[in-house]
Image 1 (tube, rainbow, N blue to C red):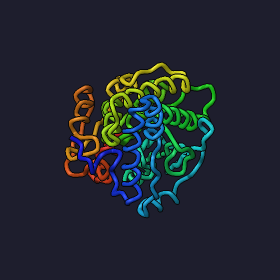
Image 2 (image 1 turned 135 degrees about the horizontal axis):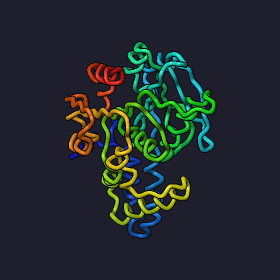
Image 3 (image 1 turned 90 degrees about the horizontal axis):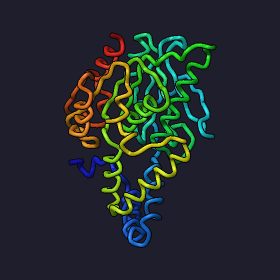
Image 4 (image 1 turned 45 degrees about the horizontal axis):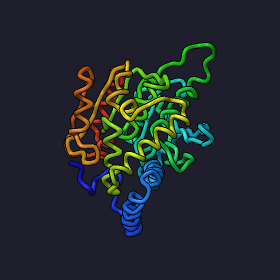
Length: 309
């Protein structure tokens, strides 16, 4: 069971203003859910897709300053793309989690550059230095696809060269897999850290936080399917876009990493993905949780070794 204090939507020590926001929003959903579940569902979807921006910590500032910063435009929003290493080196792409930024992978960047790779990271819409207020998995999968095209743009009349590897964390694992499954993103190796197996499970967690009625949660899911089928022109169901399904499209080598003490995406959830991909390499850690796992030296070494082999 996910600890409430470590919940994906309540995973930071919140000031009084945030506690007040959660209290008032929960109360609003309770009232609106009785009057109009559909309207409550629309409001819930809007909130579900709205991340909180956090300041970049000091430990990531040097990496920001040493990166090559460019912007690409995806659906009328400027998306921040940072890179480290030689331009002609094989590329390792970084896909960060909800509420994060590409420099969260700071422990990986220097070892990968030292190993001869060009490391490319982007900030998800509504995160870091990218524009936007709201986003979703399909939105980010499209960004990954556009980054993939951008790094291959110098080639003429040739097939796009696969990423040497993609490293995804948390929400970023689902977007990577969706890009591979639906948008022809190609990578020789895929590393998924702290991955969740089901989008339904994520929406259920969201419903728990705001104590949504079942009718409100059902309406939220229905509104999303209507809205994003039109927006992206892709027919989909919640199961279609879940990692348990999209991971089947991974053709390259696969490494799954999860911590036994992860309270945001419990190990029991990550194990469902492990069990569904017996061909994948796995690494289980203990005591690093959902975020500190990205700073663990043994995890970094294992990932670099996996990419090099």
